[in-house]
Length: 305
Figure 1 (tube, helix red, strand yellow):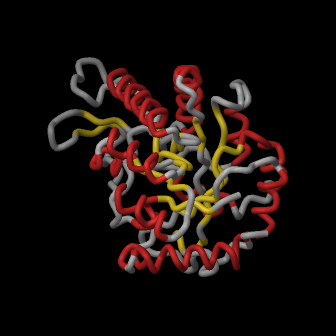
Figure 2: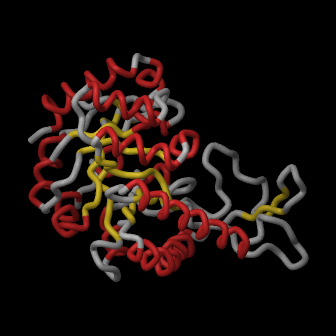
């Protein structure tokens, strides 16, 4: 397994700067984000990574497949469930097409939280409320129904991805994100959703921040086997910051014991890149070249088995 820089770790870097940084530091792979690819331009991003001889270890992200049910009769507007669900599927098709163009090893899928619950925003005061634009926006407490929506969306997206040679990588997130980002909280849930599909179409992400706590982790890594499409690492900080999204730290700065997880992922048959993905205000404020240098050192000292 080789080390890869996930672009979000050096958030200030554009695609061009991230590619140049990887080359400068002797890395062979980079994980890209759709927003930055769009800013750089898809065709230009493809050219940059190919000219540099880099692999694209992942494209982040597709997903957010859970949408509110159709509002009450007479309600109109873009928040209608049918419209929102079609829009979500269309956006994921575009993400698959982008991953195919980039030759990405996988498209990371953050599947979405409870329908109508938006990351970083307060809940509507009532189960059916109005946005400032006057459109009534529902939210749902139906967790089982949200997970069913994810399964239904995969029935549409997995064949589309397979036709384009793209592997969808379902990422279970720590349970603290269940409401607003991912109704998949365990690796077991993600593996179960994969099983109806060929392994070249749908796999899973093993992200240490999200799964280190799971008492079934090593059993599920073994069960995932060659369906492991991405191995992402960062540490779980204590105490967590007020914005728990930014609790991802440099390896060695938190509580995770990395070598047993790395050994288990390798034993399961994963031979891809190990991607460092850090969301952290202090890391983002630091010099990106210093962050990459530290990342390389900590990978060798802390993460490698």
